[in-house]
Image (cartoon, rainbow, N blue to C red):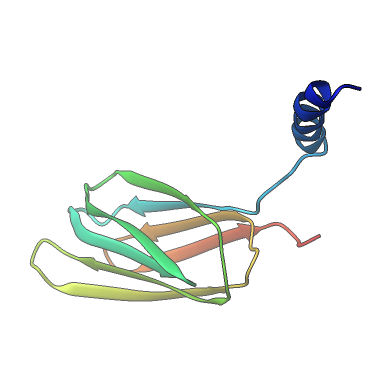
Length: 121
């Protein structure tokens, strides 16, 4: 092969091969559901090495977010209600490389955490 063909062909072939072999990054698909009866403000989920959230979440609304778990540690939800009271709920512990679904449901009386994680390979 000529130098030009090698410089073009090898990177392209490598990219196709990597895609065919299924390069995969473990991600958590998170959903926060607001069933509290009122708007939640300053909604934040802390997870190992980072956090995510939204300014407000109307009653009946969902907020979706994908993240990669780097490090291990507990989850925590914080939010402010319409009376400007701060709330906090401790969640499960995540291990580095966790992959699957996380649903956090805020009801009038409590916060429910539901996880469905795949087994690590």
